[in-house]
Length: 246
Ligand SMILES: [Zn+2]
Image 1 (cartoon, protein in one colour):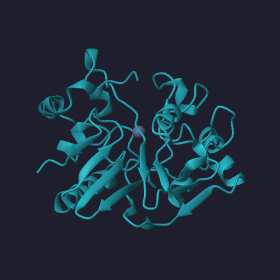
Image 2 (spheres, rainbow, N blue to C red):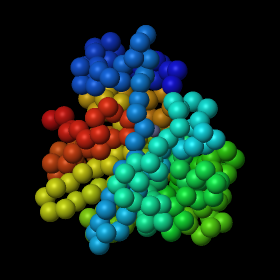
Image 3 (cartoon, rainbow, N blue to C red):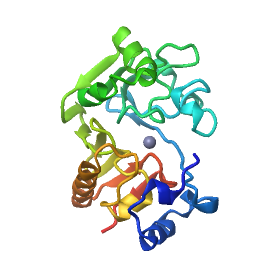
């Protein structure tokens, strides 16, 4: 992606950028370019139910292909885990940006996870109504296939899997809390897109839909993560799992 970190986070000070660089140096490329991975998460259980959270950048013809580096490899990753697309029972989409929905459609141009309900906040669906590129790659084919499940607010998806509206990055963004006994993990989605927003919750990303809500969301979920001793699972930091700073 041809964006510098200074452009992506225009309010960040040199000192804040330096601290973020100490925490996640690999996201700082040549000439200050932002280098970012793209990540999806697979949750197995309870009862062997397979849930995927986010669907990456997708095929070479997906909406993200114009800017994302190379073709996504989510199906290959699932195969390595012994999971076929038909085994997936639920897909949670944190939001409808093109780097999180790429494999809604497979190479054949039809929904890849044909046995999965695709769970999205209705506010997010409403927000993309005028974006034909995204609708034709996500909402329209899912709705036609009976695979779109819209939610309004917090939702207990399955035991130990709770969906939490986290607006800011987009208006209908949601995150996922996983819990098993005392072990808690927060799949953040794009509540934070870079280490600088982990260290400094007030620093907005230039493309954030609502920077005030985004900062409030970060403070709230970081507080809850610290209280519950939860680790964070992020989409775009170099390390998949990271603790919330004290
Ligand atoms: Zn993203």
